[in-house]
Length: 263
Length: 376
Image 1: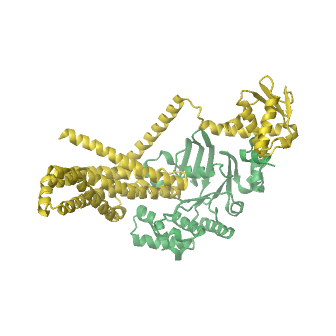
Image 2: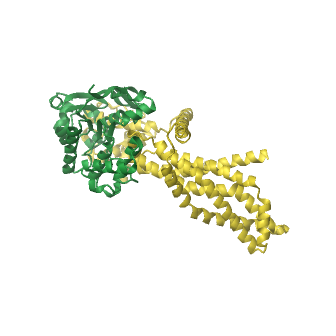
Image 3: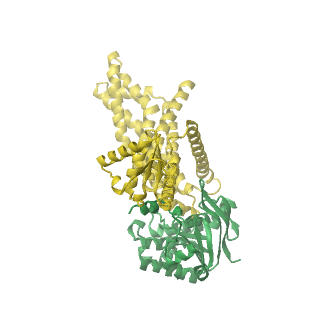
């Protein structure tokens, strides 16, 4: 079975506000799926629910064919060990060196001796070009290096699925492109399935095989990148054309309305 | 703001059929004090049969400033019991303002002061119930991490526990010594003043030793630990929440309660009684210094202390210190783990952790004292 992730009819609410409304996602081995959408569209929320951080109000998250939120604790942990996630802020443990950050899951989950884990951590750091920064603390490296170190940590347990939350956010174009190349390289070398939440057109064009687009909590487009780009939907078209879609005056946010009369 | 909202949302907007139209031009909406007074005067002068109408066709595209002046003038007129009608604005602008002010209306409704007492009581009760539910789940998870995990083959993280013991215990010793010495001295000096009047100055030894062992030692230590370590725990965990480190742990199948909460609470429970013993000894030494300086005699003072102090007093104090440690640890971790809202949230959590820890320790101390009083 090639389906690594299957999200079925996910509904997420914060209070009375529905953030995701019946969203379906599917990821196969060796595939790069980009989740697109504007700020606040619910794409990061979707990702967080896919990795077990919060149970959805309705729907199922199937990881490797198992319902993540219906699993017993140990089974759930075993399932989570098969995925790796790079957070938007990298989320490195600030009190640990880069090497220790990567060695931690190896020691805790694989039972490796710290000395052995340290060697493997160095190898993972070498994969992202940080072999010479192993002894540095996260506070001592740049934003781009943090992202790469976070990626090395996500690779620590040799995951079958990698998830990226806005990987190029806050990075300069050259570093962002290097990270895209790294993602493609990882897919080629490891054959993992990859989910990327982003709204960076450059990244989407460079790496995505399949895309889904979320708008106001609903899935408005899905399929191969070329097909989605060609869709008639005005929001999809505006996203790729980088234009704000025309909305009636009544649908504009309040700040826009006030700007309208402030002439 | 309420008036501004009402002006555009609740007021009937008509299309030129105002009974007493007052045509306003651009210069009429003057924000200066004199201009504003003049506008109000004109509005009131145009009022007839409890209503007035404004023809706004000459200012069809008002600026923000003009809108503010207009809204305020209408508010003040309406405060006198008259009804306003607006006319002459393009439908698009009216629609836009209605949408804008509707949004304001819904935002304000959430914190409306007009909410009835019953609604407020209900809201508070629901919030409290949600808080208690959160606390209940937290305590269940904490109990699992501390007491159940070692039984089911997930041993305590001793490296993390010893690190916390060092940070809380060793690093905190100096301040405990300093404060306890001062408390011992102050307690003895205050007692001496009273006891000397009855020729019973030697009983300073009783006063200091018993009160320090049973009450002051554990409480002083708890307050110092709450202020020094409780705040540090809440701030550290809160920062980890904000920087997504806790979420990262969860996605790596590293349960934060096992790796963060349990080591801190366990370290506190081990270290606090030790610091309490230090506090007791130093405070008694402070009393001893005062007693000796008053000429009570070193051996006399020590003999009297040994006579007054029962092993039960010391055990009582140590039992209290364990409870205080658990309270400080659980409260501080809880506050840290539930941080939201960035740096401001971390600050609030830190304050809450210290305040709640100190209050709960003092309340627990009062309960203990009552129990001991009635059982002895």
